[in-house]
Length: 345
Length: 283
Image 1 (cartoon, rainbow over the protein chains, first blue to last red):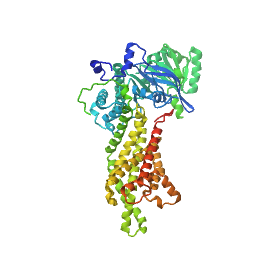
Image 2: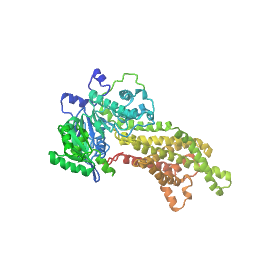
Image 3: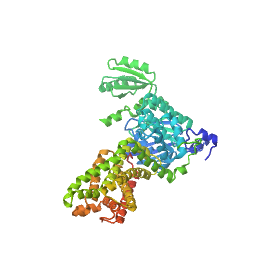
Image 4: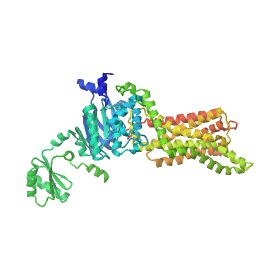
């Protein structure tokens, strides 16, 4: 019950759990927003999460990047307390998701990938309903509902049925729903799905405001590299394992220099070229499909040397700065979408 | 809900958020209200409330009365007699259909993602059962009560006690059947499968409830099945209420007790099925 009128006014927009932010400001060790400790989950014989351990820091936008089937949906379900992990622990704001789901839920705002709006209700009714689920009522709820709706810029649509909204607007109402109870942690599952580029930019704008002005910790799952670039830190998952953790810049800088890629006629030609490059230049090239890839300083010079050394073996060449996909390839030895291709075949 | 004062935010008070009001009654009320709002926003459903029961009763009742004609002195007397006999059964049928079909929305909620956001909220799972079942039961009961208006047409002349008893029985039967629909719909992810169960279990449940023919007229095993059918007691109870002078299979007290027990069992079933927490995906 701390805070005078001024403080309360400042918090009107959005105030995460006052205790947590208070402790953080005083330097007392407050529980981390999200902690994973040997988290493991299997669906019978299939291991979906394999011994994940990492933390998410306060007030950061944390990305969970991985192809379909990498385990990020499983992790999202566990963090949103919809599923109990088979081994290990996950804690949100210090509360175990399996042992204390109610406390976790009070701290967490969740925006699911599937639309959770009732389209036969108005936007305001949807928010009222969500508020009721989180123990808000009466004038307090009405005020919160107005605030979050203003925050996502949909005040003028409050009385409209949800079914009349566009996809981007629906997603913004979903975000408003997730924020109605002032959570300290916000979980978003593939939030850009079905949004046009403008709506995506808006969404990230809102997420940064939440982080910067209100100290909300945001966890976003995504399979989009360009979206992962927006995150403060990233965990890259592949087949249920953590393959990389760090800021996008850190991860990319771990790859020395440039990525040089030589496209060849086919997989056999690529393997042949790999052997010849390895013998001649004393570098370890990797084969990805029809292409041979080399990480190298001064990529443009190396490229010229290789093309002059093996004319005819190369169909196309490219030099690029490392991307997150390159990080993924380096850590896993295969392309980002390979997991999915395997599943489909 | 107009906030006339300044929107001063109260600090998050986890104590208040843990109260039964916050985790059970408020969410249950919200879910109950949603069922009603959704109902009156879909005009076709509102029209069906009045039109369909009347149609069922007149068409089915008149049709079946021919079958019973030979046993009676005059055709006219028989026809009106059977319409009277069929009246409680028709009410239960209306209630059954409304209750069961309203729970089909549970499957829709699950597929659309609405249920996911409810399951992830810090509420007692019992609030989901309570809100959903009371919502469906309210709609079913209202429909059953409206049908009572036609009672004079069925030759029913009944006092206040009879009417009150009938209203209570309709409410309880609505609750029990909605809860039954909830138990069936909860684990399902397709409405087609739900239809199959309706045809396999729920329609026979009604056919063998004494709605169309009395248990006393049934033979051996069929009679036994009818006596074991909890809906039989609901139909019989309505007969108690609407035709107090006629002798019924069971006494009003027995009928009321069995109906109450039926309510308690299916509601406990809904509660149990919702409170399972597993390593499997919740929705």
